[in-house]
Amino acid sequence: MARKLDIPPQVILEGIPKPYVVIDRDYRILAANRRYAEQFEIPLEELFGRRCHEVEHHSEVPCRQLGQECPLDRAVADRHEARLVNLHPDARGRDRPMQVTATPILGEDGEVAMVGALIEPLEGADAEAARQAPRVLVGQSRALLRLTSLLYRAAPTQTTILIEGESGVGKECVASFIHNHSSRSTGPFVVVDCGALGESLIESELFGYEKGAFTGATQRKVGLIESANGGTLFIDEIGELPLELQTKLLRVLETGTLRRLGGTEYLRVDVRFIAATHRNLLQMVDEGRFRQDLYYRLAAFPVTIPPLRERKEDIPALAEYFLGLMEEGERQLPLSSEVIEALLAYDYPGNIRELRNILERAAILAVGEQMRPEHLIFPSQLSVQRQGSDVTVVDAQFGAAVQQETNMAAGMRPSAGADDNPLMSRRRRLDDSRVLEALRMFDGHRGRAAQALGVSERTLYRYIRRMRKEQQPE
Image (cartoon, rainbow, N blue to C red; front, side, top):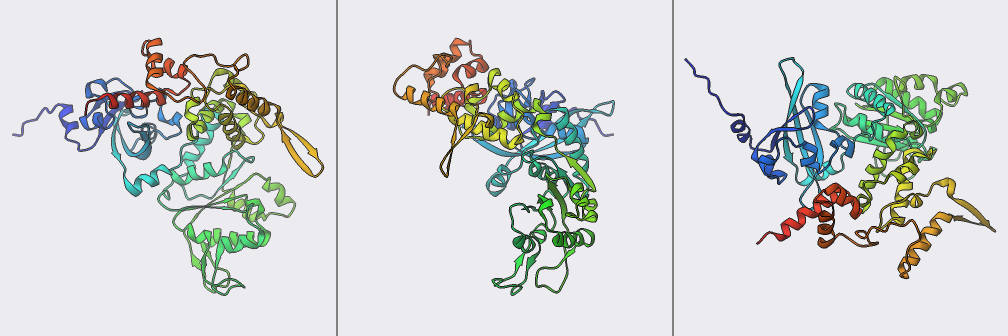
């Protein structure tokens, strides 16, 4: 008779040759093997009870709020294994791609009680490809959550999708999200912008051509539709497509075949189409500028992206996400309440694209110090002066900021209201003495120390780890 062996769970975990961790629904670590502890350079006994995003991302918030999709969230939502690639900072603060395979573990009630995650660091070409992987849609507003829910439902299908929304709302980002959550995610994602191509180029770019098809066609060219075979073709600004090409595109959608310019044979293609526009296509149909049959073929599943002014609660998360992508931008995190209030007070007719531009300007003006409301330059504060045939853009606020830079360079004290924090000095980088002084001042509290130093907690964490490594004996 076989005898049941009572093997301790830790022994089982240690038998897994790669980093492995078990996490509950609240992101708390329940168990892990030593390879996981070594990967993130934390003693095994100090892991239990901590949240995975604290250990893996040095963040107090889940990785979905850092602009990455959370493997645990996906495994819980889908109730089956989820495999994702996320970026994790190493000891030097550089982002390293790691493939995370999350497997749901069901409780006695049949619900997901915890998730086991296998973590595999990527190297070489796989790592470089992972660094280019798109991030998730950033924000937690009701409008964005409703949109995300629709996208999760539509993405796994082969349905043609029409994305509508104002300029700058992120239509290409949404199309990329759909592609990466579909069965075609390993195939190509090809983008064509009809608004950026002249009418004479759109046809040859979309359909390709054979050698000799026209003057200058010295060799065969594969079109963008054919290039997207096995993947997704995103046609941006579909409303700019000429009527005669609308007919050719409709044939591709209905038959799955195309013919290159100058060609005689029809080629079969396997492509999923996603189209986008900021125009009112139904009005264009009424005016005879867009084919009705093509509209209904494209709008099998219409998706409307809300403008940023209708989901302002996402602005702080978007702002921190964009700053995190900018060089030295992370030094501005967390943003002060005054800056966030100023960002929320504007309506952003240019939507997310405009928000990013405003933050880029502000980061330049605030270099060396914490961002303040006066660093934010909104288009309504820009004025235009005409001098003869020349047009000069004048911004009083920008000029004031430049004058303050000049005064500082001359050794003059900044104007009233400037930050007088003794731990912060313009154009200075962190050094050991300032870091230690801040930690002593706030009794080791990294969050308060980081805020006083004018850097993010994640940046301070990286600096402390580097200090410890440098102090270790050879």
